[in-house]
Length: 102
Image (tube, rainbow, N blue to C red):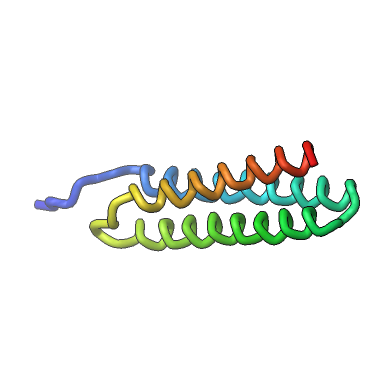
């Protein structure tokens, strides 16, 4: 008798959700790049671009790490992962507002 639970398509749906999150972050980062270049790339714009790139890379790395962790039998908790994703998304939002107002 097989004692492993059948999770069905749950892992695949979760992987796809992480991919969509990264895709959304990529679109936001590209829109911030476009905004920074359309207003003229000054010191503030260059700083915003650097922070945007760091934020996007952090989002990408966290998502990839989480996707790989899901392949294990008992993946680690999600609390730190969600905190990192939240910080990355909020940072991109704040940078967008600052670029618009500046």
